[in-house]
Image 1 (cartoon, helix red, strand yellow):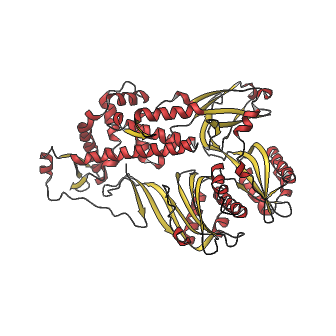
Image 2 (tube, rainbow, N blue to C red):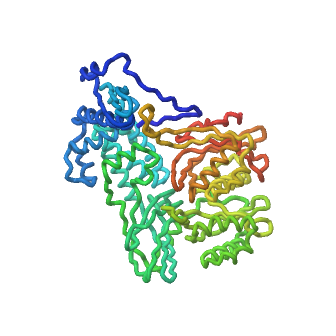
Image 3 (tube, rainbow, N blue to C red):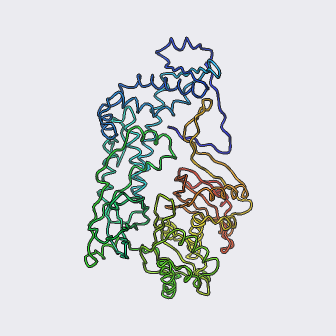
Length: 606
C-alpha cells in the first residue's frame, strides 16, 4: 500500500470516467479487463458491492501465483487450521482491496435510492498492487535492520514481524529476496531467523528486590548481546493473566506481584512483545493483513527467569550491564551528596504517599511539577544510580533515579530516568524526564561545542519532552517564537469514499500552523489524551547563525498517546541567544529521516 505525502494542499478527488468505452465493451474484453458490478440503497453500498465482486475476480486471476507452502504456513498460524487453500488465498487477496481502489475506475449506472455502480481495472494494473506491497516489505526489513543495529529491540521486532506478515500475504512471498551483508537471501527465511536471533540475544537479569506486605517488585536489567537494550516491550505472568506491557528504557525494567504471598515466586515468566498488533491502527494495510493471517507464533519470545536469593544475585553482571558511558562524565561536575540527601527524602515521601512532607524541598512551581509527574503517574523508584550533579549557571542538575510510571487507564507502564533541577537556594525548581543514552551520546560526543552548550541543549530537550507529558501548554507557548514556522505531520487513514482515489490509503498529512493555531490544537490534544509519552533516540545536530547561537536538531521521536501513536523525525531550529529563554523558530515533523538534515529552515545557517 503506497504512502502519500501531502503538504499544505487539499486532496482533489477525481471521479474517473470510462473514456468513451461502454460497459458492455469492457465486459466483453476479458483479456484486458476485469470488472465488478454492485447494487445498493446508497452509492457507497453499491460501490462496496462492486469492489467486492472486483476483488473476487482478482482472486481468480492470481490464485495460482500464491505459494502453496507459504499459504500453508499462514493457515497453520491462524485460528482456522482446517481452512482450505482457496479460502486462505481469498482472504489474503481481500487485503489488497485498499490498494485497488485508486486503480479501479468507476461509473455510476444508476443513482440512489436504487444505486448501481460499475468498477473495472486493466489486468496489467494488477501487478502494481503487488509491487507496492513488495516495496513495503523491503522497507520494513531495512528499517528493522537499522533498529536492531542500534539495539532498539522493540522497534526491530515490530518491523521484522510486520514485514513477515506482509510477505505471507504476497503471491510471490516464497521467492522475495533481500540483500543482507552483500548476499541475497530469501526473506521467508531471513525474517524469522532475525526475529529468533534477537530472542537468543536477549537476557533478563534480576536485580534488587523490594518486599512490602502484599507486594513484591523485582528490578530487571534487559540486555541484547550483553549490552542494555535501548527499547523493548514485554509483559509478565501474574499468576492469573499477563500484565500490561512494560516499556523498557536503556535496559531498565521491572515486574511486580501483589497478593498474600508475593515472595513465593521462584521464577518470572516473561513474554516479549513482537507483533505489536495494538499499534497497527496507524497503518490500515498491516492491520488488515494481520487480521487475516492470524498470529505467527515465536516460542523463543517466552522466557523463564529464575529468581536468586539476594546473596546469589550477579551484582557484577548487573553493574556492568547498566554502567553509564564515559561520555556522561562532563567537566562541570559538583559534589552530589547534599543533593542526593534531598532526592532520597523526596522519594521516601513518594513511597509512603506522604506527599506534603516533600513540599519543603521544592519551589512552588517545582512542587506543582512533582504532583503532576510523580504523584499522578504513580511513580515508583526502580534504581538510584550514583547521582551525577552538574553545574549550569546557578542551577545544579542531578541525574540518577530510574523510575516506573503507570498512569490510570493507560495500557503501558513506562520506565524513565528523572532529572532534578535545583536552584541556588538548594530547592528543586523543576523535574524532567531524561533523554535516552543514545540521544545523550549524540550530543555529548560532539567535540566542537562547549560543555555549556551541550548541557543547555540537553536540558532544553528534556524539558521539551516532559512538557508534553505534563501537558504544560503555558511552558510550550513560552518557548515558541511568535512568528515560528510550525509544520505538523500526522499519519491518517482516509475514510472509504467512492469518489476519493486515495480512499483507505495511508497518508502523511502536513499542515502549517501559526503559533496561535498550534497552541489551540495542542490544547485540544491534551484534553483528549490522558497521557502523552515521547521517547527521543538518535539525533543529528547542526550549529549556525551569525553568532553561532542557532541549533538545528533532527531527532527520532516515538510518540505515544491514548488514541494515537507514530514514529518519525522531529526537527527544531532553536535560538539560544538567551540561554535562559531559548526560542523555537522552526518546528517540523516528517516520517523518514533526511540524511542531509536539509529540513525547513536549516539552510539559513549559512
